[in-house]
Amino acid sequence: MLVTNNIDEIRQARWADPTASWGLVPTMGALHAGHLSLAERAVSENDKACATIFVNPTQFAPTDDLDKYPRTLQHDLDTFESAGIDLVFTPTPDIMYPAGFGTRVLVDGITDKLEGEYRPGHFDGVTQVVTKLFNIVQPTRAYFGQKDAQQTVVLKKMVRDLNFNLDLIVCPTVREADGLAMSSRNRYLTMTQRANAPVLHAALQRAADMIVEEGVRNAEKVRQAIRKMINQTPEAKLIYASVASGVTLDELEKIHGEILISLAVRLGETRLIDNLMLKDVE
Ligand code: AMP
Image (cartoon, rainbow, N blue to C red; front, side):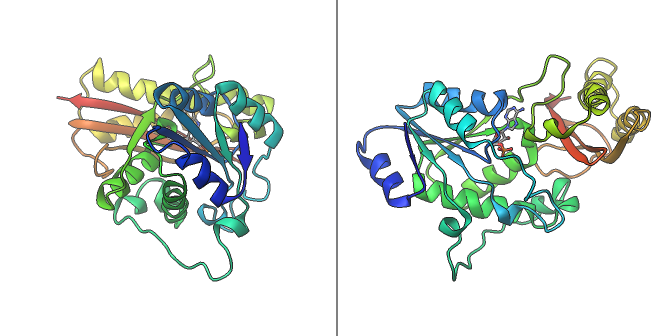
C-alpha cells in the first residue's frame, strides 16, 4: 500500500494503468467499522482503491472541534491495509490549500437546511474538499456513508450539476449492537452518555414504525414523538428532529414519497447525528 501526501504521486499511481477502475473513500481518519465497510466495498467493486485521510479545516466552524478531532494515523493505515486499499492520500492543510488558494464550490438551497442551518458553511467546506479529491484521484466510483445523509444528497447534486464523471455510491450506516451509529465522536461519550446514546436510533426506529406500521402521515406528530423520547433522556439535548423530503430536504406536513427522518442531539459536549431513509411511502 502506497501512502503519500504528494499529489503527483497519487496521479502517477492512479494512471499507471488507465484501463483500471478506481474506488475512492474519503475520510477524516479515526477509523471505525463504518469506514472499514466503505473501504471493503471500494476494494471489492474496483480494480484499485484509494482512501484519503484529511481532517479538512474548511468544513469546521471556529467553534467546532477541529483541534481536538481524534487523530489515529497508524491505526488508520493498518486498517486500510488490512482492507486491501492500494493507495492512501494523507495531505496536510498546506498541500490542499496553499497560499493564494481561493476557490469555493457552492451547492444552492439544500446546504442551508438541517445540518447546514446549525453548521453554516459546513457543506461549502465539504463540497470544496470533495471536489479537490475527485479531481486529484479521478475515481470511477466514490463511496460515502448514509450516516451523513445530507452530505450524500449534497454531493449527489454536485456530481450531477457539475458533470463529475463518476458514480457516487451510498453505503448503509454501520451500527453498534445496541443501535448506536458508529462515529469517530462516540469515543468522547462518558459511560452514562454512552449508555443513553442508543436513544437516537431508538427514536428514529419509533418514527419509522409510526409511519410504516401504524400508517401515521402527519409529519409533526412523528417529530413530536422523536422530541419526546430525546427529551426524556438524561443529559440529552435535542438540536433538531426532522421528517423531511429525502430529495429537497424540506420539512414535510404530510408524509409521502422518499422520507429522510433525521436528528441531531447533544449528549454532554458531544454532538451526534443519525438518520433513517424510507423509500416510496404511499
Ligand atoms: P468521516 O471520517 O466522519 O468524514 O467519514 C468518512 C466517511 O465514512 C463518510 O462518507 C461517512 O458518511 C462514512 N461513515 C461515517 N460513519 C459511518 C457509519 N457508522 N456507517 C457507514 N459509513 C459511515
